[in-house]
Length: 178
Image (cartoon, rainbow, N blue to C red; front, side, top):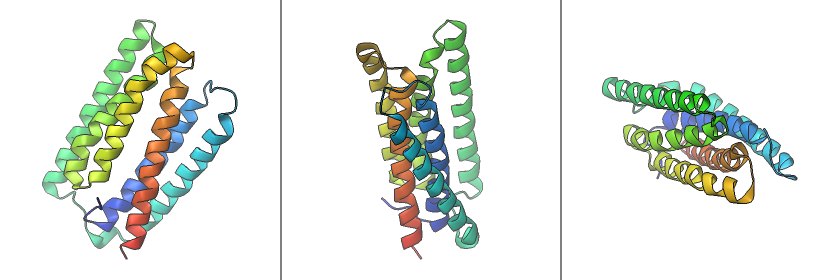
């Protein structure tokens, strides 16, 4: 389950932690009563983990990475497709009066894009995070509809939690690697 390269695990911690903060923040748009302290705590964990991951990556930048010539190009294509799909879906939802579902769409795209990213880095944890984020997006729709929660809350909280968990795991993997 560990990354082949220390730098890749550390950067995964930095990136997942950063985006965990964003998802916990998005969940604060209109969370159910009592959620806010947990969402703030999740943001703090994400931020600290992101900073730790970035510091670890920068101090071990020359330790190697899976992003060689082909890996970097493939990664760029995957991220480009992700951004394009996320943008097209978000615009379509906004134009059709369904803007409240944009977080669900974005989480779905993020989750799905992590499957090929896991292959590029040969780091299965990224695939596990992708599966859980995808699942969170799929569960968010019926949960929001049946429980009356805002889609941003029932998408942002679990997506943030999954990303923060992946970040913490990746930071420990990187730190314990040296």
